[in-house]
Image (cartoon, rainbow, N blue to C red; front, side):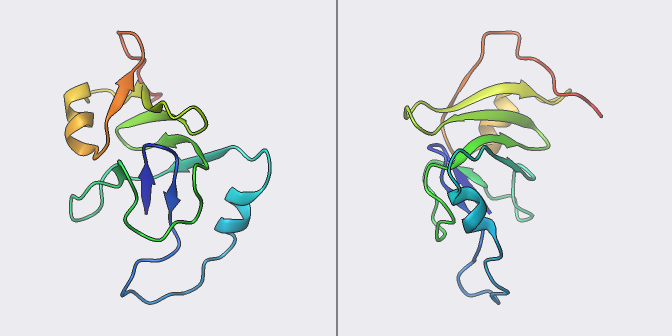
Length: 120
């Protein structure tokens, strides 16, 4: 799974891996007036970035993501205006520097202090 700074989503195939089918993801993200919220771990199991400047995997949808929620933070995505990612919430115990290190894309932050994510 990859998300880009401009709202692209790559979630249906990893080249060289067994393909079970794309499911309904392309239909869901392609539907008019759909708000797409991606929930995922911030980094892959091997530690590589999943939120990157541009997706390297085949796209499920171009400029479709509105919000990304991870175990570290919440980003809003300006998919229409080209403003990229904005960090709007952060997990307790996580710093902005931690998020920058774990994110393969540039992002802005809301005004300090950044609100904390709910712990529930």
